[in-house]
Image (cartoon, rainbow, N blue to C red; front, side, top):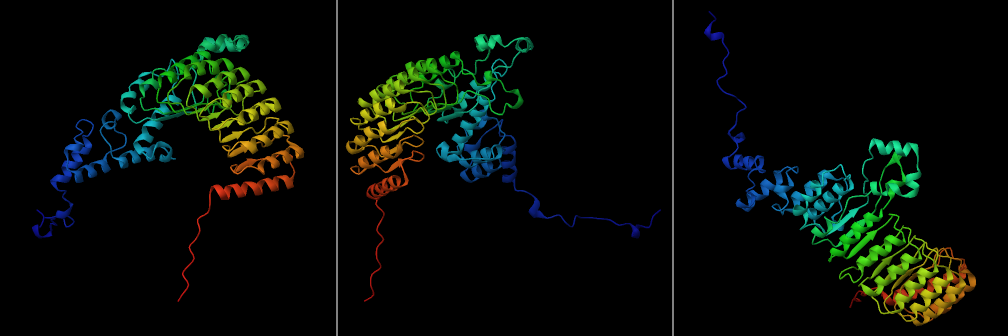
Length: 435
């Protein structure tokens, strides 16, 4: 039997401290956080306890619980920063909650594979996000996955693709059920194509089908609050442009239309010109298309009539002097346009001669871009002559136009003078002289 005096007994924990025992209120808050999904009683708590619970809630809670319950911006900020590396709420109205739902919906649309992804992923999100989504930027639409039989046919022959028989197989997600269900949607930016396709590149990945266009046209027609519509880099041709325009005529809210980087020719431009007089359009961007003089003339005729357009961008088209002169004649009477971009359009001295008169008479234009055009020294002198009678022009880009250094210098002097008059610098008060 061991000696009782040699046994080492620990009768208490020397590290135990009363402070480490959490109060009952703290235990209750922990329980609320742990069971928040089943019992979200956030707004039954005092304000101080609400803040504590919100700070501890995990960001992975089901949106069916948090979407229409949590208004706290700090919580949604955590949701955003934990999910995305770059978070710029300035493009989301300064709201973290709005940013989360807009980006979340965008990601679902970018990864949606027709005939594979369950449409419920989108439809079930609508009632949760419809009160927060005002802007959608979708720069990718995935096509359906090819079956083994279709891949074998591709290996045998490319003739079906050449004849357009495969178009029925590559329709993208139909926005017709989503867009009308977002009552606050004001901006829609779309690109039909695939990013980072790598070695799996196929031209069909970048095909905007006629059925896609029909679905989209029907969607934007119903979206009465839409102010900004951008459909870029999507191979939109004349037929698809005309279809879109038919559904945008007399739209009550549309202010900006961007169809840049497409395949729009004269017929498409003629269709778009109708929107200038039959909507409240203020900004029209058609740069990098295939518009020639006939399309430019149609746009000019619309400008000559009463309209609200303030900015027109025709950069990198083929309007040449016939189109440039038509635009100049329209601007002799137009009183709304403030900015005109016709860079890279092969316009020359002929257009410059007419714009000499425009610069003399038009008091609305403040910005013109004629860069990358063979205007030449004689054309530059005519523009300088017109600017000598103009007090409103503050920007005139003549880079790579061969107008000559002296002419460009004198034009810049006039522009500086006009800018100083339009935007006077504040006068600094002189310190009082000591008595």
